[in-house]
Amino acid sequence: MKQVKIHQKLIRNFVPKDFKIENWESLKPFFELLLKREINSSKELMQWLKDKSELESIIEEESGWRYIHMTCDTANEKKQADYNYFITEIDPHIQPLSNEMDKKLLESTFKTSLTSEADLIFLKTVENAEKLFREKNIPIFTEMQQAQVKYGATVGALMTNINGEEMTLQKASNFLFNPDRKVRENAYFKIQKQRISIKESLNTLFDELIVLRNKVAQNAGFENYRDYIFVAMNRFDYTAKDCFEFHKAIENEVVPIVNLISENRKKNLKVDSLKPWDLSVDTQNRAALKAFKDGKDLTEKTILNFNKLHPFIGNCISEMEKMGHFDLESRKGKAPGGYNYPLYETGVPFIFMNATGNVRDLVTMVHEGGHALHSILTKDLELVSYKNLTSEVAELASMSMELMSMEYWNVFFENEEDLKRAKRDHLESIIETLPWVATIDAFQHWIYENPTHSQAERTVKWNEIHSRFTSKNIDWTGLEVYKSNIWQKQLHLFEVPFYYIEYGMAQLGAIAVWKNFKENKEKGLQAYLDALALGYTQSIGNIYKKADIKFDFSSDYIKSLMNFVKAELELCH
View 1 (cartoon, rainbow, N blue to C red):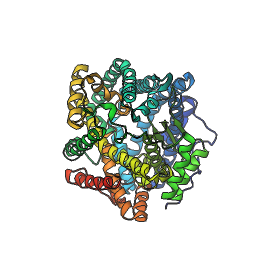
View 2 (cartoon, rainbow, N blue to C red):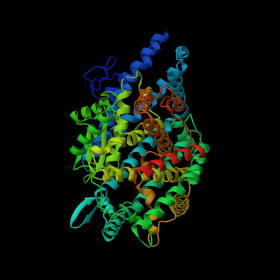
View 3 (tube, one colour):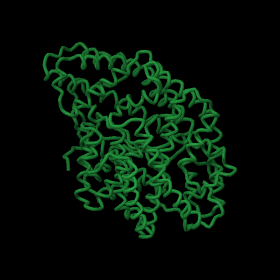
View 4 (cartoon, one colour):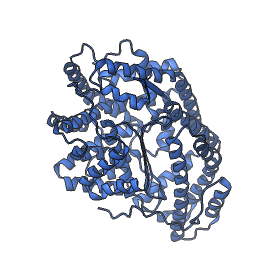
């Protein structure tokens, strides 16, 4: 196990210890100092990079805390204003000077001393950033960020009333686990009524985002935003063509299993037609599993769960709790979704989610816990660039943790039958999620390849793609308007475009990590930890290799992994 002092913050050597970002004028001198400094040796270049990285850590943490506070309370005008001030009055000034520093590095004769794999990857990312930079895109980025924030505020404000109680849609979704079909149906329509009430505003918002993103791409000399974002996301290891191959492999190897699962669900529930409100309930009509009581209970049980994997992993969550780096429970005015936010100066991240007590919340917690472990294992890497993880690797950390932690979910479920049921439900959800990942990714490719499409054309295309990857056993009769708009619940489309296929790629990797762990726990876990500790100092392929798995999404590989999952599913019956 890598030795990491969890509490040890970044030691400032370049920026004064008491400096806090208030406005651009206070921050600007540090950029000017770096830009004016002469670099006359390889040693001086490395020191310059370290000082630049220190400044970036401070800036990213300040931005991070403002985002965290805003998402925890979207109705708080001051928190909204603080975040908006950063993205409108500080960040736009940073971008051109960051570009000047990129140029300074690339023009340095001493950059040839940067020869490690980590440094070569870093230089490629700098070259990409410099290649993409356009001064005229800065105000567009600001406009995009402001528009993206509207999504969370709009969705986070949605509430519904069930049995006389006003509640968030996340909490209302717990009724979809109820054995009483009428109760489920009622909850489904209550939730969808709220979602549909904002469909026009979200469609309009999405149209605005497409226009802005397309303009950014064209300004940078790209034919479309998809081609632009592949460069911006530093996707050195695969292309759009590989994504299409992934879609095809999922369609051929996973969708048939999804059809079988839904067919069995329909048979076990003894229903004439399988409706969307029948997809979460237990097939034996048992009451929904309750994994924990509240956020405190969830945290305590996660610490116990992780301790069984390794004491250091449990200690990571324990220390985060002591630092107050959690906001776990769903409430009115809180942004939707869940995340682990790295804090590069503190070195200890923040976990945000909307827990209501169900098994999916448990999965979200251990998922984000995997991200948190990754953040902590990479906190002492020399440069921020080494910690800026590719999402294919970041999601490998979180999804592998879901599966490995599952071996010790008895801390959440004392009853053996409940434990088997929770494991079975999670494995089935993994199988069902892979086609959804392919759906969202294929949808995004079409959207940005056809940026001038109408809302009506988008709806037609969505339904076409959705039908390609969804179960043929689900009956959407009379529910077409809901089916046509369910893409709007996927916040990635609005907030982080093209960040989604990584979940599918990493899910395959996670299954392979879990398989290794099942075969040899100590060896499998160590390979996983060793891979995480690399950060982004090696290629994706090499990081996966360090984890003793393959970065592969061919049909044959997917088929072999699905066979392993099916065998594990059998053990849960």
